[in-house]
Image (cartoon, rainbow, N blue to C red; front, side):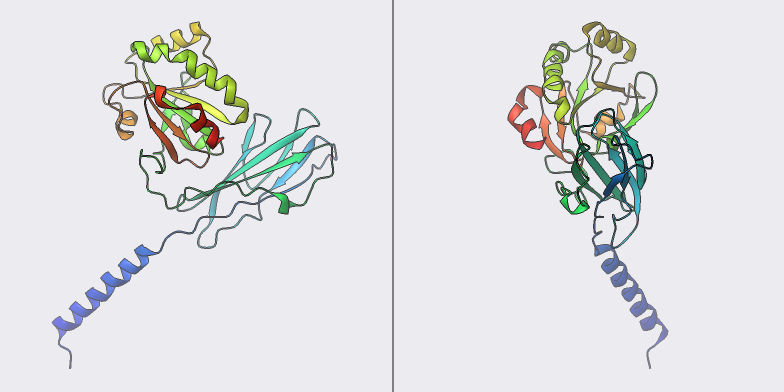
Length: 273
């Protein structure tokens, strides 16, 4: 007969082993997929995008993010969208599950032709599911939610499906200011291919940076600011001790470069577009 102490110890060990086993089960990322049909109005410029065929085998899909290919975005499992011209567009869908894993797929549609079956969709690069969060190359970039100059909140995850050049920057830093023309040249060269420039201003007074950018005509960047300009929590989270400092983040949110902007080669940027 097993005594009470032995029984309690055995049950406790079983619970620990069960918890370990459960915790060791990796989350399976969702699968993004969608169909394209003509919109309800029947016009050649209107389409209905249906992502309800996307699925997650071990959880639920919590967000659906669309890049329509004409510079606009949307969300939800189904979206009707009207394009400005009868042309070719690359539609991007990013789905994220309840564990934070994501998957991306793209499909080019030609509005002048009959819409092809969904099997022609490009599944796109692998997701960042189960990749540890960090700032080294190959890690998932830490999420942030920061205010822009007009106080709207912008998140890093808003840019899933695009390549992000993230720059920590200050208008009081001569090297930062001298890098602006190069950043602008990258935006002009690769913006249409999916590159977005996000600069996080570390100025104690962000209005100074806002004025400098406006006067220089650098209005195409996504300019954000630290809320706490003394602690600078985002800068700390990214391990940045000096500015300027740049990160290249791929379409799935994974860091592909971490260092000084001058060391970021155009070939590296092009390889992730």
